[in-house]
Length: 318
Image (tube, rainbow, N blue to C red; front, side):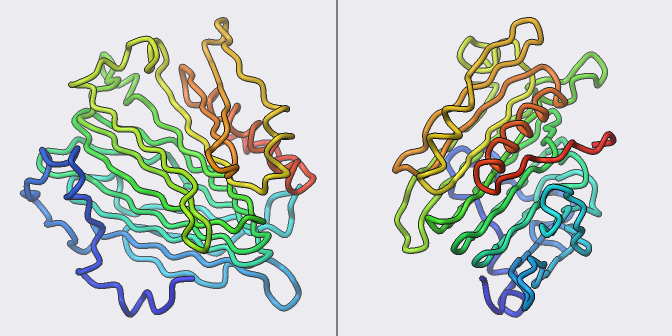
């Protein structure tokens, strides 16, 4: 777990993606609040571990506006001992110059579920970009489900994220991201009108052994999004990475069929991550609802293999 973070967190530790080549056109200083201003420098540190009775609890919580996390809840009927946490934001959508850092640590034997209270909106940006840095650390036999609500990029959004997962070989992390094409029903529609989305995820072992790295940069002005092999006629994209012990990989893979459902206009595929790290699962669809449903079904399959119980039904209002 990161120690003394609340003492060491200074302006010098701002999330910085200025060196990324794809962000070079978007380095103009914001004309409104500067990068790193109060309320634009979100920080969250969540630490889960077992207490003396063997119950998983949220032991460490440090948050800085606009990110908010309240007390953990225990509402999962299939895993009643798993703490469930929702990340909220008091600042509305992400705007230019916003920088966010999130750290999630699950110690040996503990488990946790993390999501967001609502979709993450990326507002129109004039001068700069919004950046998110995430660090996820799992100890021995730890288990984490990370299923946030979709990300919605408005026109002229510039967003970049980097997620580093350090996972013990005996642990399991289910990490998902859902990206909408934009505000589909805003005016005449606002699909794939953002400037750039850059998303990088990489996994490693506690000893520093690098397992995989996946990065995609989406720039609609340079490459047509509607091409076959890209999004074509789909509007929503889900990217799911599962790092799990090698013994779990084949049963999950064999139980997950790739498909194209032309009637419901939804498709999904699965492949192996390098170095026997786990699985990569992708879903395309017309709306977030059907895509979320497929992602949760896959998560239930993973949980059944790892924990011996399925995912409960989603709340009707989610």
